[in-house]
Length: 497
Ligand SMILES: Cc1cc2nc3c(=O)[nH]c(=O)nc-3n(C[C@H](O)[C@H](O)[C@H](O)COP(=O)(O)OP(=O)(O)OC[C@H]3O[C@@H](n4cnc5c(N)ncnc54)[C@H](O)[C@@H]3O)c2cc1C
Image (cartoon, rainbow, N blue to C red; front, side):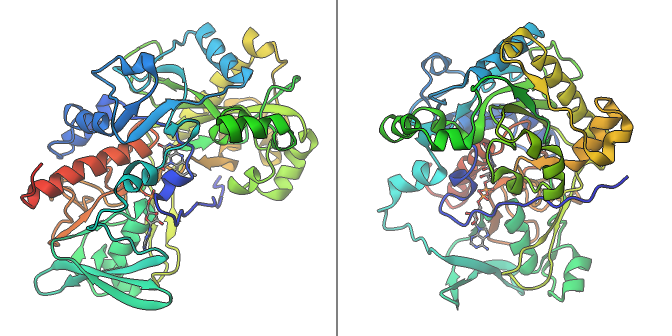
């Protein structure tokens, strides 16, 4: 059966983009992710090449990790640390995982599988966004111009030379144009970069024809949309006041003081996420495994904070039936996450109006094996909940079924398949829609130097160029792409490196 589900997506219109509102999870991905990029026809993107840029961006402030100078660096612009404060449930998760055969690991080190407290992009307990890391330090540079409150509506491409010459944008309701002396670099993210290219005549021929946009270059822009979807609304109740609950934190003078004065306490935990496990389901004991499943431990759940159900697009009637009866209880929620999806979606134009949001089809469970990874994730988490570290807190699975799935028998694989199709939470890792690849790849939009195929003086530099989504939260990989692009741009323009 097809479950149609609309997920609210966030569109961060701020300096620093999604890094200003993301969960700050710092994660590089597996070496095979990047070796695969290279194998797909992208020279220079193998792990041995990109590791240099991951190191360049990093300022590792966790002393025991910083000592590993092969995989970590200090002094880069992006500060990385552990969250300064933890609930006892986060430790229970790590202890439970070890009792079930897991191991602790630095998931940004030589190998990725295993369990850990989250490494996050924070400094002194506060968010360290791309804006603070990269733009703050150079804000007075005379060559840096930022136009705030501006929306780019089109890339200007000379139809004769087929070269980008500048961009058109709107500010204060006025159309403006800025010309590029060297090249135009599009970094509008995996939803808006393809939108901008298509509005400018670079995209799939038929789609542009249908929208009445003159074609400049026929390319598979908008295809190859990937994300890390997770199994939402699987929650466990506990019988002690050990989880994060919004009203308890907001009523607590101590929690305010802890955060405002010392940047610690429950308020320093980004979105309730505290610890994580990476699992290669095909070979779970392999310490060098390539994870297809992530278990993201959350020390609260959709009943802990009133806005969460809206963020996750949960139907109000369903919420009232399934979850309202346990509101006010302490709880935790794993987010089993699909790390290497086979299913791919597409971004399309709604119409020619650049101010209207494009259409986004995630196509999450096109391949049933994608859904099966999440079912395995849910079953593993139930096993963790049954271990003594969680039983100390009386952890029990909340067993009210999704009404439409009840006939499958609560707890069976069939039931969880149905449940997950009702609650596919996005982790907001949209990527891949301006795919990097050689000209021979019919889905490629940019080449391995991130230049748009068939259009001169135009590059795309953001999460949209990922040919395959890495087994990683996508912020650090996007920083890596930007660092590498900066070197390529300098090189191509004869600037000193
Ligand atoms: C809620 C949320 C939580 C996340 N949590 C994590 C996490 O914990 N860890 C992690 O690694 N990743 C996380 N991510 C993903 C990560 O933040 C993104 O993958 C990464 O920031 C992508 O960077 P980007 O430059 O490709 O796009 P974005 O960060 O989306 O930046 C694009 C920018 O372009 C601007 N823009 C778009 N269109 C136009 C236009 N027409 N004119 C002018 N400006 C435009 C946007 O306003 C935005 O500022 C999260 C994302 C979200 C939304």
